[in-house]
Length: 253
Figure 1 (cartoon, rainbow, N blue to C red):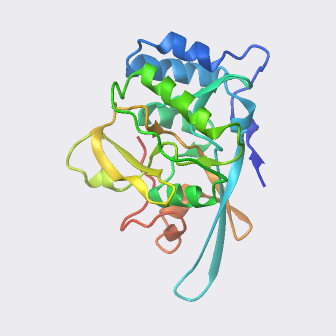
Figure 2 (tube, helix red, strand yellow):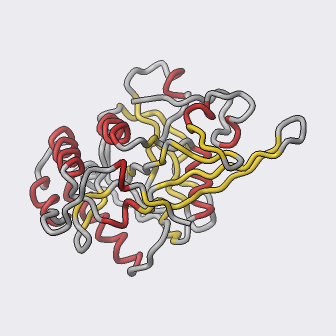
């Protein structure tokens, strides 16, 4: 069952929402800071297609050392961060700093590596990665990649995966000796194996066409009761529902 979370998002006026084509026409020659700024402005003004508000459930289970069963449901955006209107929208890669600001305003968080894997497994539209090799961090390449994905998608609807590397939260950001890193993971191939292992090699302002921001609703349901996912990540007994790293906990950008 999808969960509509419009109450957390800016009011959307579909009659005046700008198009995705317009976004990349404006951002064609922008650097990352200018593109981030425009994307955040558009999102907060409600230039968002309606489908993006219908989050899809991800269900995971585990048993603790005493054999007690735990069933968690959390909800993720059906696609990566987009702006535009219902007829013309685009996926826009943004930095983790911009993403964090937007996530905070709509009661959402970034996924962990395990959450990316679980989202891929439970997705209904699995597409093969489409690598590109030149001008990787340009707005023009980002728009071209979006159009390529749409040609591959062929109007199929539902929870989509396999098309981007996720920007993720990970404890590696706390142990990396280099400051100001971004963590990425995923881009699953049809065999289920990710192209991108968990990686913190890029500086946090670097973003290219392959990066995607998946919104995860910050409130889930654990055995039928509401729970904050960040609290679960900090719980040594229950973090395994969301995280398979040696050290969990939510790391902010």
